Length: 452
Image 1: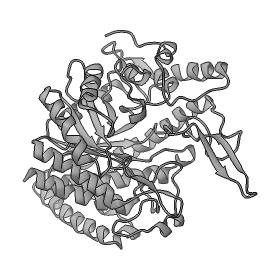
Image 2: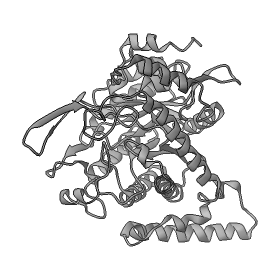
Image 3: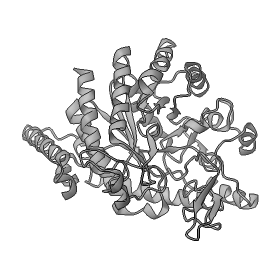
């Protein structure tokens, strides 16, 4: 394998969606600090996940990937991490039990601090009737959310803070999943009053009772495997800020191959998947399992070229295509991609992102998504794969474990007027815990129909 290009070589290729740092010396200092920091994940863990995603590509497992649109430094608390982990565990249990398929669990967590933006600038109306334009907020990895000139200046020291926040988050996650919280016998404790009182919460509780009876039976006959007491949980984020991802790329002592040790799974976004661009070039050299977001502008030839560049050896589990077409386009746009990729014999895991193609501005001014659109895109994803005889391999969603009001619809029937009640996202709207759980039951039904 060729040597990983230098940062200057990558930037020379043209790097989209990058911060404009005012102080090059400060950037060099932050990168130097990151290069000496211990890895956040280990190459062997990345290889384990690659093996699990290979099973997804073969149609033997389902990938559940979810978490915040954009993590914040202030959100690194035990409660927040536990709540996100809890809803993902609940969703995975629903999918596994109701659809009888192993679920690979990956969080948008411990690294999802940078966001691409459609514009470099943001303009707001001020109380005095004037307008002000400042650099757009690009996530806590780059600048601050507060709408002030000082806050919006890109600060490379924030990349060091991303590392520290990610380390703290991973420590919490590992403590939870190995310290008894993820024990399947605790399935009831993952419910809370606001979920239990909802229709979907009651449905979950009924399923939890069935699981408890099954576990009691297995314990009675002496079956008590380790899988009942812990789960494998992996971290992921968009590999966006080149300085961070490059500094966290290390040579594995076992294999002498490069891995991005900032997360187990990293992906290239729709706005940065240029075939001759810096992001595709960098990720073509690392050995992690990687993903690419594919939107409605993607042609079958684009998909084939990306696969050839990112996975030239057609290694199982190496490459995941995460489609984000929008509910109105998925049934027309996806078949051509899947047909051509399948005909080429490529080993690809197909995952549906039903969030990013379904965003709109509500009458109240909030950016939101309709729950019905999210479900419709997932259903379209399943319909396409069913018609082609291929496997709908997974789900990639923006969600939170909290009772926020950011997406309209769902069993709670949230409306535009409800959005103001508890809209907490600093970027895109997320499904709340009830909506996430409802989604998992609906997807489980799709999976069950697919496997029957």
